[in-house]
Image (cartoon, rainbow, N blue to C red; front, side, top):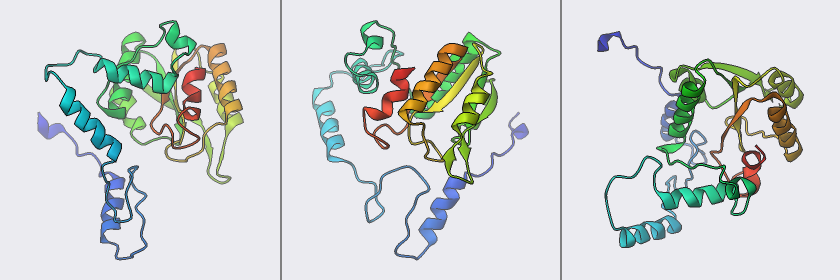
Length: 231
């Protein structure tokens, strides 16, 4: 059975990491992977994380299995961080929070949910988008299409082209958005453009799926949640 499998192509990011390690230039900067590093190239443990770990060890009462949704307290805190403490969606009990094994795991669970709810759904991703998006949704058996997003010549958002493309979407479509710090181009819609996008989603009936991977790194903790809260 296993001899039928084909080797996946090497991850280009790993090649960048190797090239960076081999480069003797003392002024080199590794921009190949999205993690924080200090001047020595190390990724230190933040003191706030150390404090949280100490509190967890001191206060935990069990190592038993978690329920399917995950840690209730973690879910509540995450929900408040993303949606706010007193938003209508939370107050009206319209938000459900589930802990997943990382962002890729969340996307795959979302893809499986879409596949179960509407097997013939189409998923639209921006051009360009994070490379893993291109593998996650087809692996779940979903058709993946693209919509125009970034003008490489002008280094600008193709907002009008994007809106024209998404205007053909309907209730059978899922449109994937990056909430902030678009990966890989770094260009995001402004607040007025997000409002226009959410209006279009309501008008056409397509389902938005928002990938919020970099909350706080573009405009701020609250500001970077705008797309999620508008939808």
